[in-house]
Length: 196
Image (cartoon, rainbow, N blue to C red; front, side, top):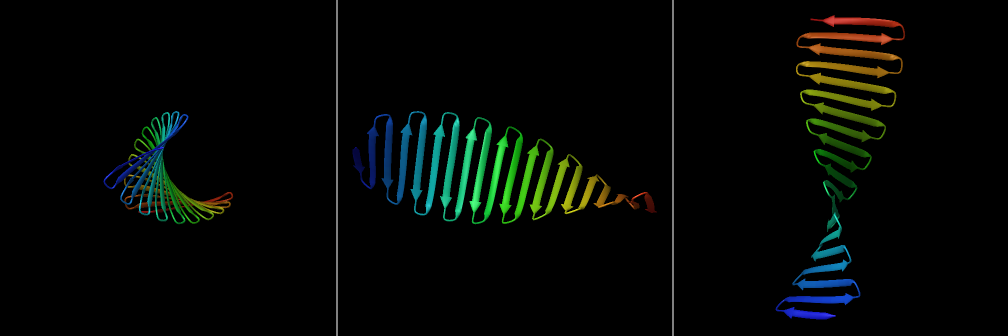
């Protein structure tokens, strides 16, 4: 074990076979570097903050802790995955080329956001309720499910179309400017209502 001191800086280097462990201390900052073959593990501590960086070949994983907050960043070639935890909140961000997927959990609430080019898909789950929001250019489509109830809302420019399903009942609502068209189906019965 080698120990080097330069003013307030202390660096320890320990080698055991193929393993090298470097511990550098500068005031309140401690940085550990451990190498084993292709694996490099860096641990930096500054007061309550801990940051770990692990490299294995093309994979890099960063772990940063600050009190109750933990951020994990993992990179594998073009894929980046970030995980942030704060108490009961967890947020995952995964990037693969032009695709980004965010997953945020807060208690029973789960929010997923996936982006691929001009397409964005949001999925929010709260208990038995699931709400999907898909955006493609000027088109937005919302889907909300609560038990047997499904509500679809599609917006394209000034046109809005709502579709609500509750068991055997389906109700469509289409709006275009001042025109509203309601179509309600119950079994074999269909009722149309158009308002202008």
